[in-house]
Length: 269
Image (cartoon, rainbow, N blue to C red; front, side, top):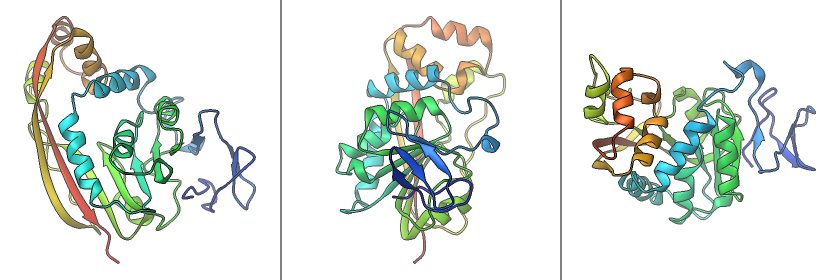
């Protein structure tokens, strides 16, 4: 197991449905199977992260298959890192969509771990994939033991490189997914007075870049319910011109550009 106590940094062991460390700190396991390892001092609000409404909208939209080309690209990259006992950590796992796709492409659920600061997302992820391991936690303070994971998947999640280096084993691999420059560009043009293209992601100091892949495809939304889910799951739910957003919500279809950058890095032995 890879979890460590967020207070004293010692390893956690499961005892009678509670995760405990040698110092006596204890964290109850929820009925869905996840554990909350987010100390109060690491919260910026009562319920940090995406809301249940946003997470459910994202789940419905992704499960409708709109990001299938991205899923295929992630699974192709991650299959190269697959080993019998390889441990994978999904940072910013949300409701667990991408980890569920990896299980369908060879990864063992028992070797998959996911963290997210949003409790509703972790609860959904744990219910959907009960054999995996999920925790409510901050990506800035990973409750994960040093040098304990073989592979990290990070899709649109923030966090310091130092934490990635700390938890990744020597020779381990990180797959980092970020928006490409043209991601949802026509939508931004409709919603913002001065839209800006996504800037290139910063290099990750201490990690060696192995490969860089651009994943671009047309995003065709053909149902009003799915269009509303799409708008709800993104920052566009509250950003941009209100009248433009309200007009979009009334449409029955929308054609956009999806653009993602997949960067693969390794940690030196």
